Length: 225
Length: 225
DNA sequence: GGCTAAGTGTAAATTAGCCGACATTTTGCT
DNA sequence: AGCAAAATGTCGGCTAATTTACACTTAGCC
Image 1 (cartoon, each protein chain N blue to C red):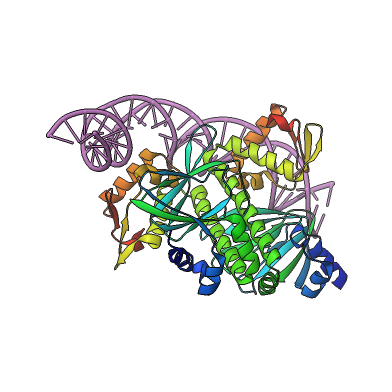
Image 2: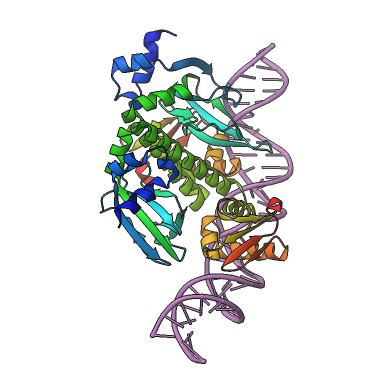
């Protein structure tokens, strides 16, 4: 990839804003760059050197396979998110991979060890990163708390609200979301069966709460969810 | 409190082992110390300055109240654990408090801002702390994954295994755990009703898997859980 | 010692939502 | 265009687990 582009990719992320351009240039930690298109599976396998990834464009889902071969959606990663071993701890047990959801994605990556060196040399960045990881933890905690204590309907509503907030285009009280998920994906995210998710979505449609199709979800009035 | 003791409290924690004694002495960040006994409620309320707490002795549970007044157990904190705003982000929304489970506890605390300064001056510590938070996140993730995908029985078994591993005294394949939780507490932790938890525990007792009473739980053969 | 509140035991009624079993629709591919 | 595969729609039976309801036991306190 073009050297200039590398720096730009990093500099663009809010985490690295505290660094000056020349600092970023010195670091030069990006070691990989990859493009992929819909449906592709990207392994960030345990055999490889531990890396941290930065999703520049598109959406992917992180999927884990348990011992029975069941797929579980661990996370949905959006443009600008870091993913991989954010905890800076290598973990070779679990078999995880990423699947591309949007039409195409761009991912860049750097070695965990390089990133650690970088953090050691930049205390301010280290602090930002710590907060960043902490924030992520808080989000995950809240999500899970929802999953456990609420029923499927509430979970779906909450998920739609979150999704709308993160990616939706608001116009008055109505929000349009680009729908790159199948109903099965949604079901997995809110931890219910595909059938239940389908039912609930149709119910919402008949109740005039939203318009659903495979390309787009329009929430009529976000304040009513 | 005695100045010397302060340093010892910090130095004793694995997070601060990388620092030399003189470094710790310079920091002097501990600003609070507290003892409390069973049943007491400790607020680390939103009105106060944000703090990070370190549990030196005993056990507490972190409880959250939702808008309906329902109690949810967020976390069980054991000796040596840090708790509070580990994410370094103040969050004034949620109403959380800690309740003492063991006969008595000792807690020390320091200001989040002091801790941030400390991290800025010690990049190595910042890195350790990030890993520490990350590890905590991983544990939480695993717990939740269990809660969601498994049935109540499996959840109880997993919880007992974890508990035994963390605090149990092993003798051959049998493990004795000091039981400072009520059946209701256990039920809340594994996210089920009190009745179901009672039933399952009694079932395990009749199946000779464990001996349960209010003071102690003895798991007959940990390998069979 | 006796009272009260907290904790534990047990059972029946009810229910959310999973599962299996399809039909139908849409998409992607050659 | 035509085919196969993926995604969506719909239905009842089934089951784990919540809820409601109440009896019993233990612990703490005056």
